[in-house]
Image (tube, rainbow, N blue to C red):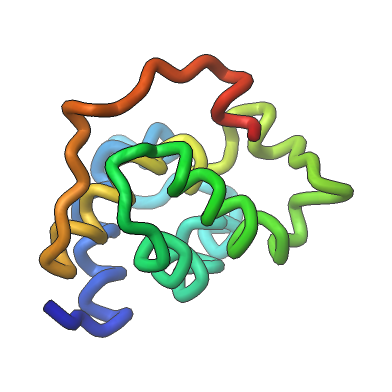
Length: 125
């Protein structure tokens, strides 16, 4: 199934923003600068990175995100990201449901039943 970026963004906003810890009691984005959200600021790259993977191993998606999204994000410096390390990156914090939603919306499957046990060290890879 081929979905355009606008449709995918709507799907992600409906699914992720409603569970985001940055939302207000009214359900709006509570970030001081909503455009700072890496998930949506770099959304085309997020979609491309996720669609480049065909795996049920979240580490493959993490690798694709780090290479295709984090590498061009202004928050990352020299391969490290303080925003991600402080669990303030919405893309990183909600990566599994983002992958699930995009894969589902494009007619692919991501089986979370086979997710490996990950420590914070794996997520930083």
